[in-house]
Length: 280
Image 1 (cartoon, rainbow, N blue to C red):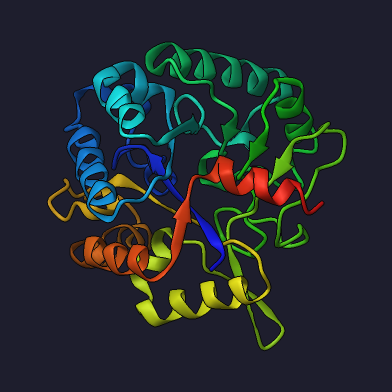
Image 2 (cartoon, rainbow, N blue to C red; image 1 turned 180 degrees about the vertical axis):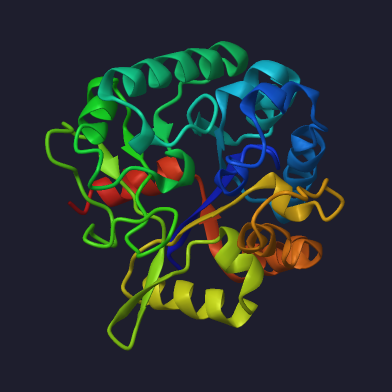
């Protein structure tokens, strides 16, 4: 069986892009932080299944929960960067992005004692608006990125990008691993996890991953700690569309993840990157 990449974007319920116009960043410190308890639940789930994954973590989270970060590493998982405070890459200039990369990497490595070689942009925000982003990652010494969603979406997306692993222009040896998509009736469908996995029937995700694996390609799956937390606070002033996306099926997510983990082979994103690099 093809080994797929299992990843967790470690952020709290109030960090998400869907609420960026509803919750002020300056209010974050006063909110109910639930990321530690939810991440520990996920660590238990992974341990029960005997799988290892990659935890793309915000620097904001790592500096507040260093013991949680050490638990992730102590249990054999990979820690990678998700940026400092979930600022989308296409809202930054190249210099600001480089500074964000350096700040977050230093935080993560100091807390965990583990080298950080991978990066995932918040909200998959590396696209045609950021032609300098992959070059900056390569110059910073990252081995891989998983920051591109080759789909059409109202919040993100780079539909012209390759669906599978590629070496971006001017990035040195950096490998980009786009989040998983499937093909149906001439269309490219988002199928890499997160809200798509949570809201759609499990059969869709299983079909999509099997389609990718049939081409001898690994799936790149992601989800967030807040997605297994139906008791999280509600954001009353958020747009209805954002609330529907964020809160739908929170109560079933954990069971769907257990089923998915059981049905396929999983490893870290860095391991999948190393394996894919040999094919290019």
